[in-house]
Amino acid sequence: MNTKLGLYRKEKIYGFLFILPPLLGLLIFTLYPMIYSIYGSFTDWDGLGQMNFIGLGNFKDLWSDELFHKALFNTLFMMLGIPIGITLALLLALGLNRGVPGTTAFRVIYYVPVISSLAAVSIMWNWAYNGDYGLVNQFLDLFGISGPNWMANKYTVKPALIIMAVWKGLGYTMLLYLAALQSVSRSYYEAAELDGASGFKSFWHITWPMVRPVTFFIIVTNIIGGSQIFTEMNIMTPTGGPEYASASVVFYIWQKAFGNFQMGYASAMAVFLGVFIFVVTLIQFRMNEKQSFDVD
Amino acid sequence: MTSRRRVTHSIIFVLLLIGAVFMIGPLLWMLSTSFKDKQDVFALPPVWIPRPFHFDKYSEIWTAGPLLSGIRNSLIIAVTVTIVGTFTSSLAAFSFAKLRFPGKNKIFLLMLSSLMIPYPAVMIPQFFMFSKLGWIDTLLPLIVPGLFGNIVMIFFLRQYLSSVPNAIIEAAKIDGSSYFRLYSSITFPLIKPAVAAQLILWFMGIWNDYLSPIIYLNSPEKQTLQLVIANFNATYAIQTDYPLIMAASIIALLPMLIIFLVFQKQIIESVAISGVKG
Image (cartoon, rainbow over all chains, first blue to last red; front, side, top):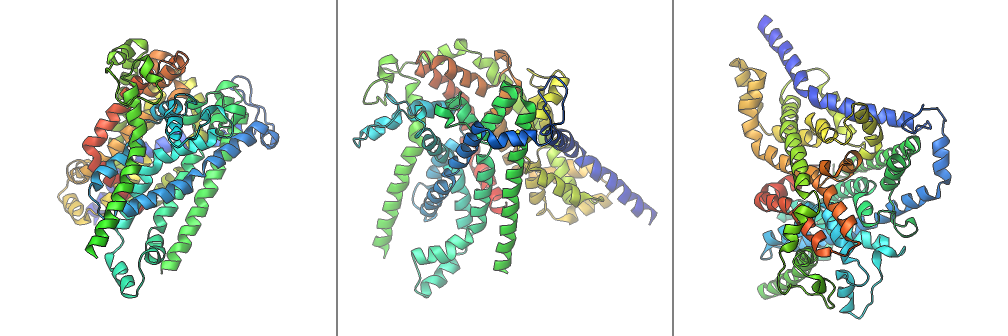
């Protein structure tokens, strides 16, 4: 009895000791800065002088800050790439799942953009979008279309970034779908076929519901990732693009914080972003809960 | 039936092939540009195979900017963080999965929910923490936080460990094995493949990171590879020296490409599992 108690006490100590580094990391590098961010968002913090409490002042300023509105709109607009990417990826995965020759090679080729450095591919796409010599317009020339100077036009800069984002992320989404498709039992399709359902019907009634958890996962992670989009803009349109048409929220935060030293104001935006992501994640969890009820 | 099947297969194959051209085309164009001379770069229609191949940009890049120190800095950060961080993460995952102590599940949930906090939301106070320590323009802000572990990795390894039977660990416990030995000589060898896959993914993430390095690093010789090539772009795009920029970019993504091709099976499996279970 005594040794058993001693053993448990030892386990308690070691168990806690082993998780101590990540726990400390969490407290020091995430929770403490987060609380500080929230506090800072209510002050006129400039990084040097005193932090004066100004209540909701920063948030009021955000409400009327045209550049922030633009950045927010741009960020949300870019998320149009999510449904496009999902559709394409699912089609690709369905194709690959049929066991055509060269499946492994296709998987690798489609995944290469995913592992490529975003900085490097941003540089490459920037050159590809060049109005005169870029690959994109030369390709369009084949069809008699004379393309615009993509990155310098306020109407085309966002679509251009969306195309690039879809290209970059397609392989990852496709892979997730492929894994999900492979876990769907053949017997469902066989049963459906016996009932006379095939093709689109069996896709709609079997495949789509079965991959729904993956679809949710992709939507949520893509919204979270998309709301933090930064590198592309920073490299491809270092000033925020024509009429600030390609600046994202994080781009604006970065500019305000480390360019203008308006730390309080930037913190307010950061808090806004954090709340946005929190809400999106919460909705996801709620929907997932509902989903599992449906299955039961 | 079989012939119809063959036709659909062929159609799908062709469509996948066209898609593959779009995926790989821009990267091949980048590669080809890096071997071109001035006329070929601006040739219309585009020249895909340079005549002749110019390799001189690949020797020029090493003196045109701090490429070598960029590679070194990226390596220092990524290697240190992934090795130490993998140790702390796997140890924590072992504890979360196989040891009993009070508050365990609550702490785990706290860690998981912290994944919702985006980096931009904490980067400003973090910057001031590190600036008070005098760590700005050093690699430390990019290294130190990672040493404490990676929550995604902990989550993944903990899931993986749930398939390791408790009986093995209980038996070793009764034999009087120390807790660290339970981890190092029993658990760790069992989860090695999962650890390796996670480590590679993490390494790639750090190697390709751009936002945190741009915040902390100013002097050219302190910068990571991604910043160095971004500066190449900013400097040489004005001079329209695209072969040079593309050569530098190829150098930036080549190491990850090689790692991916070598470990593609593990990486793809690991990604697929994390998505399906997530």
